[in-house]
Image (cartoon, rainbow, N blue to C red):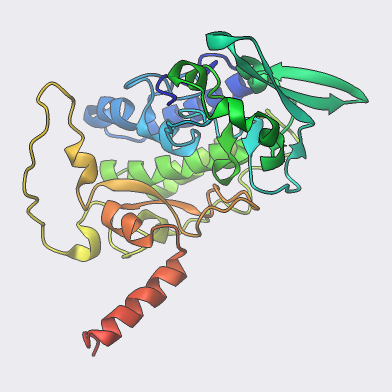
Length: 333
């Protein structure tokens, strides 16, 4: 399976660089509102920026970059990127949608361990070919459909780890969004962290960040903050599921004692990430293929327990489910 970094992870277009620079500028604005003795803590854990497609190796970037502008880490016998920019131009989907143009075909070049996927698109009446390490240069969003893989299935099912790693170049449409959505999501999550974790003044940090968004020059046809960006509503600070502060336990429940299980002492532990109250990125309405839903109107920070309980359902669906469970167990008044 693909085990390494995304192919061309350290390569960015000029536009990619400008977008990440805007996120870095927003991060610095947020940091300016954080108490002096807490600034380094925020930078190290949340606000650090990596000029890469995958957020950098190890602790290359902070949580904000990984959550807001990068796709999830993925491995397996598939060409998925092991993290990539959410506005990456090459996506895979079950169906064709209006936000991406269909590629013409897939070719495989090379032999043995040098085999490379090549994606052919049509531009102004002529074919242009993008090998896996160059797809980040595509000028617009293109989508690969199931039919494009069919001619190569017998070959792909026998690919080894090396081949999958050197061809990890696509992102799933369900995780894709426009660059402006990523930047607004980065901004919103940064505000939430600054106010809740570092006691910054909500009105001041919100206004300052909104002002930076308003002055963006990456695309003058895009007006930021957009309609998706929440107004000055303190409710965005709480977990969207249990409506409790992300600083507290889910639903204000008492601490749960987790029984320790053996883990190899030579590996770094991630036990804290599995705590009920650890914060995770949440999508109030589940991500779907046919619509770009990773945006500031749909993304929040919430408790891990709350996030896991939603699985891939919407908040309303989850609440309906819980209401039924409470009724059949006769727990409601």
